[in-house]
Length: 149
Image (cartoon, rainbow, N blue to C red; front, side, top):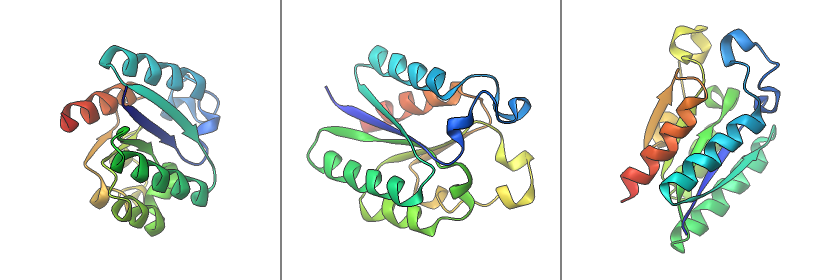
């Protein structure tokens, strides 16, 4: 069974308690269960990981690139959190490892503060889902499966 890696960046471990009016009441554990259930229904295994550390996320993207090259993984769904707006290094990792990636944001970043309107990740992403709450994770997983067929 092929895999999809779901990566969550900084502060997403605080889901359910951090700004629930913006991010909702679902916890990271709820999101991970949604992702695994969605994967199961689509015939793929989903591996969920979260880190507040940019270097760890980069290492996981490199690992995903190797797994994709070996034919064991389809791609990555990533909510880069605030690294969206700051990390050229994540952009370079995605491009360098040739990772098909769906960028995901729970909130509509374009309806928020101006500094959130620019993404360094988007130019390296296969697609982008924003503003659909945690349901966006299921849509991103489905999209990745569909575009990889």
